[in-house]
Amino acid sequence: MKNPIGTFYPASQILLDTRFFNTLQPAQMRDGMAELVKTAVIGNKTLFNEIYKNRGSIQSKPLPENWIIKAAKVKAKIVEADFRETGLRKILNLGHTLGHALELSLGISHGQAVALGMVAACRVATAQGLCKENDTNKIINLIAACGLETTSRVNYKKAEKLILNDKKAGWVLPLGIGAVIWDQEVDLQTAIDAISP
Ligand SMILES: [Zn+2]
Image (cartoon, rainbow, N blue to C red; front, top):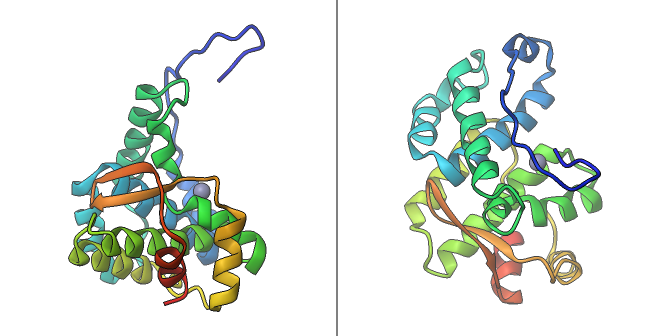
Protein backbone atom coordinates (compact mmCIF):
# COMPACT_ATOMS: atom_id res chain seq x y z
CA MET A 1 0.00 0.00 0.00
CA LYS A 2 1.35 3.40 -0.90
CA ASN A 3 -0.20 6.52 0.54
CA PRO A 4 -0.09 10.05 -0.90
CA ILE A 5 2.69 11.31 1.40
CA GLY A 6 4.94 8.51 0.28
CA THR A 7 5.29 6.24 3.27
CA PHE A 8 5.02 2.50 2.94
CA TYR A 9 3.56 -0.06 5.28
CA PRO A 10 3.64 -3.79 4.76
CA ALA A 11 0.41 -5.72 5.19
CA SER A 12 0.07 -6.77 8.82
CA GLN A 13 -2.19 -9.68 7.96
CA ILE A 14 -3.34 -11.66 4.96
CA LEU A 15 -6.82 -13.13 5.06
CA LEU A 16 -7.70 -16.10 2.88
CA ASP A 17 -11.17 -17.49 2.47
CA THR A 18 -10.72 -20.70 0.52
CA ARG A 19 -14.49 -21.32 0.43
CA PHE A 20 -14.35 -18.84 -2.40
CA PHE A 21 -12.64 -21.48 -4.57
CA ASN A 22 -15.77 -23.61 -4.59
CA THR A 23 -17.58 -20.86 -6.42
CA LEU A 24 -15.09 -20.70 -9.30
CA GLN A 25 -15.66 -22.11 -12.78
CA PRO A 26 -13.11 -24.67 -14.05
CA ALA A 27 -11.55 -22.09 -16.38
CA GLN A 28 -11.08 -19.67 -13.50
CA MET A 29 -9.58 -22.46 -11.39
CA ARG A 30 -7.08 -23.20 -14.16
CA ASP A 31 -6.13 -19.54 -14.29
CA GLY A 32 -5.49 -19.63 -10.57
CA MET A 33 -3.44 -22.80 -10.94
CA ALA A 34 -1.13 -21.04 -13.38
CA GLU A 35 -0.35 -18.44 -10.72
CA LEU A 36 0.04 -21.14 -8.07
CA VAL A 37 2.55 -23.07 -10.21
CA LYS A 38 4.38 -19.81 -10.95
CA THR A 39 4.65 -18.99 -7.27
CA ALA A 40 5.97 -22.46 -6.43
CA VAL A 41 8.55 -22.25 -9.25
CA ILE A 42 9.88 -18.89 -8.10
CA GLY A 43 10.06 -19.57 -4.40
CA ASN A 44 9.07 -22.93 -2.96
CA LYS A 45 10.49 -26.16 -4.35
CA THR A 46 8.79 -28.25 -1.64
CA LEU A 47 5.42 -26.82 -2.59
CA PHE A 48 6.14 -27.47 -6.27
CA ASN A 49 7.03 -31.11 -5.55
CA GLU A 50 3.89 -31.54 -3.47
CA ILE A 51 1.69 -30.21 -6.27
CA TYR A 52 3.65 -32.26 -8.82
CA LYS A 53 3.12 -35.45 -6.80
CA ASN A 54 -0.63 -34.81 -6.86
CA ARG A 55 -0.83 -33.71 -10.48
CA GLY A 56 -2.98 -36.70 -11.48
CA SER A 57 -5.90 -35.53 -9.36
CA ILE A 58 -5.31 -31.82 -9.51
CA GLN A 59 -8.35 -31.09 -11.67
CA SER A 60 -10.74 -33.40 -9.86
CA LYS A 61 -10.02 -32.64 -6.20
CA PRO A 62 -10.48 -29.38 -4.28
CA LEU A 63 -7.29 -27.37 -3.99
CA PRO A 64 -5.62 -28.04 -0.61
CA GLU A 65 -5.79 -24.95 1.56
CA ASN A 66 -2.18 -25.33 2.66
CA TRP A 67 -0.97 -24.90 -0.95
CA ILE A 68 -2.64 -21.53 -1.12
CA ILE A 69 -1.22 -20.51 2.25
CA LYS A 70 2.28 -21.57 1.22
CA ALA A 71 1.98 -19.64 -2.05
CA ALA A 72 0.71 -16.54 -0.23
CA LYS A 73 3.72 -16.80 2.09
CA VAL A 74 6.14 -16.94 -0.84
CA LYS A 75 4.55 -13.83 -2.29
CA ALA A 76 4.51 -11.99 1.04
CA LYS A 77 8.18 -12.83 1.63
CA ILE A 78 9.21 -11.50 -1.78
CA VAL A 79 7.15 -8.32 -1.45
CA GLU A 80 8.52 -7.72 2.04
CA ALA A 81 12.11 -8.29 0.94
CA ASP A 82 11.65 -5.81 -1.90
CA PHE A 83 9.17 -3.41 -0.48
CA ARG A 84 10.09 -0.54 -2.76
CA GLU A 85 10.16 -2.61 -5.93
CA THR A 86 13.82 -2.21 -6.72
CA GLY A 87 14.38 -5.63 -8.21
CA LEU A 88 13.57 -8.93 -6.53
CA ARG A 89 9.86 -8.36 -6.81
CA LYS A 90 10.20 -8.64 -10.57
CA ILE A 91 10.44 -12.40 -10.14
CA LEU A 92 6.70 -12.40 -9.47
CA ASN A 93 6.42 -11.58 -13.15
CA LEU A 94 7.70 -14.97 -14.30
CA GLY A 95 5.74 -15.73 -17.47
CA HIS A 96 3.98 -12.37 -17.34
CA THR A 97 6.00 -10.24 -19.74
CA LEU A 98 5.38 -12.48 -22.70
CA GLY A 99 2.11 -13.57 -21.07
CA HIS A 100 0.61 -10.10 -21.28
CA ALA A 101 1.55 -9.85 -24.95
CA LEU A 102 -0.07 -13.24 -25.66
CA GLU A 103 -3.13 -12.35 -23.59
CA LEU A 104 -3.70 -9.24 -25.69
CA SER A 105 -2.83 -10.61 -29.10
CA LEU A 106 -4.54 -14.00 -28.80
CA GLY A 107 -7.44 -12.92 -26.58
CA ILE A 108 -6.80 -15.77 -24.13
CA SER A 109 -7.28 -15.70 -20.36
CA HIS A 110 -4.65 -14.22 -18.09
CA GLY A 111 -3.75 -17.55 -16.46
CA GLN A 112 -3.49 -19.37 -19.77
CA ALA A 113 -1.29 -16.60 -21.14
CA VAL A 114 0.95 -16.69 -18.07
CA ALA A 115 1.21 -20.47 -18.41
CA LEU A 116 2.42 -20.08 -22.01
CA GLY A 117 4.80 -17.34 -20.92
CA MET A 118 6.22 -19.65 -18.27
CA VAL A 119 6.68 -22.48 -20.76
CA ALA A 120 8.63 -20.11 -23.02
CA ALA A 121 10.73 -18.79 -20.12
CA CYS A 122 11.60 -22.36 -19.10
CA ARG A 123 12.61 -23.29 -22.65
CA VAL A 124 14.73 -20.16 -22.95
CA ALA A 125 16.40 -20.91 -19.61
CA THR A 126 17.21 -24.45 -20.72
CA ALA A 127 18.47 -23.26 -24.10
CA GLN A 128 20.79 -20.83 -22.27
CA GLY A 129 22.07 -23.56 -19.95
CA LEU A 130 20.49 -21.94 -16.86
CA CYS A 131 17.86 -24.54 -16.08
CA LYS A 132 18.14 -28.32 -16.33
CA GLU A 133 15.96 -29.84 -19.02
CA ASN A 134 14.43 -32.17 -16.46
CA ASP A 135 13.18 -29.19 -14.39
CA THR A 136 11.78 -27.51 -17.49
CA ASN A 137 9.96 -30.71 -18.42
CA LYS A 138 8.53 -31.05 -14.92
CA ILE A 139 7.21 -27.49 -14.96
CA ILE A 140 5.66 -27.98 -18.40
CA ASN A 141 4.13 -31.31 -17.32
CA LEU A 142 2.58 -29.72 -14.26
CA ILE A 143 1.14 -26.85 -16.30
CA ALA A 144 -0.41 -29.42 -18.66
CA ALA A 145 -1.75 -31.46 -15.71
CA CYS A 146 -3.62 -28.34 -14.57
CA GLY A 147 -5.52 -28.43 -17.87
CA LEU A 148 -3.62 -25.51 -19.34
CA GLU A 149 -2.29 -25.38 -22.90
CA THR A 150 1.48 -25.54 -23.21
CA THR A 151 1.72 -24.73 -26.93
CA SER A 152 1.04 -21.18 -27.96
CA ARG A 153 0.16 -21.88 -31.61
CA VAL A 154 1.70 -18.64 -32.79
CA ASN A 155 3.72 -18.74 -35.95
CA TYR A 156 7.28 -17.54 -36.33
CA LYS A 157 6.32 -14.09 -37.63
CA LYS A 158 3.86 -13.46 -34.84
CA ALA A 159 6.32 -14.64 -32.19
CA GLU A 160 8.92 -12.28 -33.60
CA LYS A 161 6.48 -9.36 -33.44
CA LEU A 162 5.49 -10.14 -29.86
CA ILE A 163 9.09 -10.21 -28.71
CA LEU A 164 10.12 -7.07 -30.57
CA ASN A 165 7.17 -5.16 -29.11
CA ASP A 166 8.28 -6.18 -25.69
CA LYS A 167 11.99 -5.68 -26.04
CA LYS A 168 12.59 -3.27 -23.17
CA ALA A 169 11.34 -5.72 -20.58
CA GLY A 170 13.94 -8.14 -19.23
CA TRP A 171 13.04 -11.80 -18.90
CA VAL A 172 12.52 -13.60 -15.62
CA LEU A 173 14.14 -17.02 -16.09
CA PRO A 174 14.09 -20.10 -13.86
CA LEU A 175 17.41 -21.49 -12.65
CA GLY A 176 15.55 -24.61 -11.63
CA ILE A 177 12.53 -25.22 -9.47
CA GLY A 178 12.46 -22.73 -6.60
CA ALA A 179 14.96 -20.21 -7.96
CA VAL A 180 14.75 -17.55 -10.67
CA ILE A 181 16.71 -14.58 -11.95
CA TRP A 182 15.37 -11.40 -13.47
CA ASP A 183 16.34 -8.66 -15.94
CA GLN A 184 17.81 -11.24 -18.30
CA GLU A 185 18.48 -10.45 -21.91
CA VAL A 186 17.42 -13.10 -24.36
CA ASP A 187 18.42 -13.02 -28.00
CA LEU A 188 15.63 -12.86 -30.54
CA GLN A 189 16.19 -16.29 -32.08
CA THR A 190 16.24 -18.11 -28.73
CA ALA A 191 13.03 -16.36 -27.71
CA ILE A 192 11.26 -17.13 -31.00
CA ASP A 193 12.31 -20.79 -30.81
CA ALA A 194 10.89 -20.98 -27.28
CA ILE A 195 7.55 -19.44 -28.22
CA SER A 196 7.09 -21.05 -31.60
CA PRO A 197 8.93 -24.39 -31.28
ZN1 LIG B 1 -0.79 -12.84 -13.17
